[in-house]
View 1 (cartoon, one colour):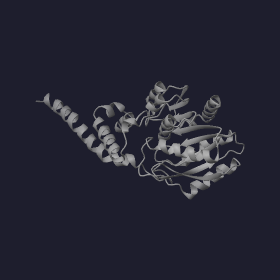
View 2 (cartoon, one colour):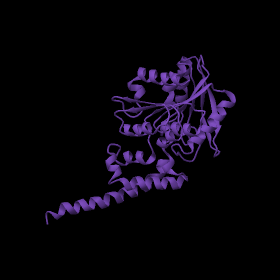
View 3 (cartoon, one colour):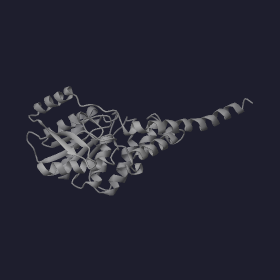
View 4 (cartoon, one colour):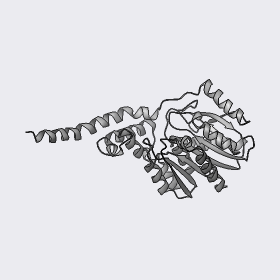
Length: 306
């Protein structure tokens, strides 16, 4: 009898844990499509204005209508001594354009003009759901069209972190006017990312085994609710669809989107590619851990393209 108890417990665990995971995945799917919105406050705008004034420049409001009718809002910022080159900046999930302010500072000082947009369903931008690149890549196309009507970029690049990195890579796959991408801590694809979250971010093994039904139901329901093919939301597939230069940055201590995501993207990339692993850095913290090296690598990468 005593020998049977551990076996019964194990069998219950193997049956109950996946069932609970599937129920939780179904419940959290709407949250996945509607991440917490970080509102753009007056204080944030004032902070940005101070930063831009220190660089002897200012922001211009930039509003673009997406193909589905949603209005996307952000800023265009021209460098004090512009080179004619522009960089599209993409922030992470549950953030807004302020999340890439320090990246903008580096680029503006180097003569790059920047576009800082709130992604759909984020900040001050409209949009019923976040789709992690599927609709956002079309948003990028509309943004580039609007930018070209007034600014006529000499060269156009992109830089993103986390969700924004994934959006930048997927955008470049379908928007050939984007010549190169810097992507920090991108997800490889939604399924792979869900394993990390289902395993409480620290054990993708759990996410792929006991908790796997939670990832299946979450992605399935999210795809049905948003009307998108979730299997195609994949930066890994994007870099294999069009050859464009990429600088891929992974943070060695990242538990949200570990380096295996970046390595998968690197292996799939058809174009010129570089990968920088930042020792000790957690999720999207490369700039904070290695500010001078981050600046050197990003600027050298863009300079090598044009």
